[in-house]
Length: 120
Image (tube, rainbow, N blue to C red; front, side, top):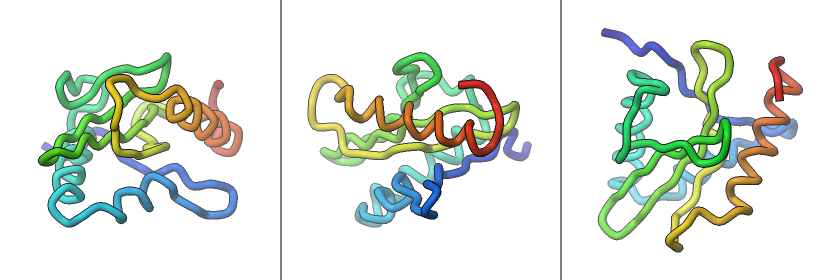
């Protein structure tokens, strides 16, 4: 069965892809594991359960990748019926997701929707 969803990376108006840049900064092994989790997200979409994914704040979700001692988080949202937009990525170092990281994902979503259509 092929992917039901397509993962895209949020791109700023300047052409930067912060979440993709974050992933590229990781070592090979954690980057490969994150890629496998993203492929799983493409297969399952909103049906991907914990511990792989979780809802954070309204339309913002997190992909939870553990690799060794690293806790990798990719924040994403759904657009239309087939697109998952990865808006932000970071290494989780505290028990909770920092509010500033969630707000970055919300801003990326508002920008994406303004440029690609849809509701905020």
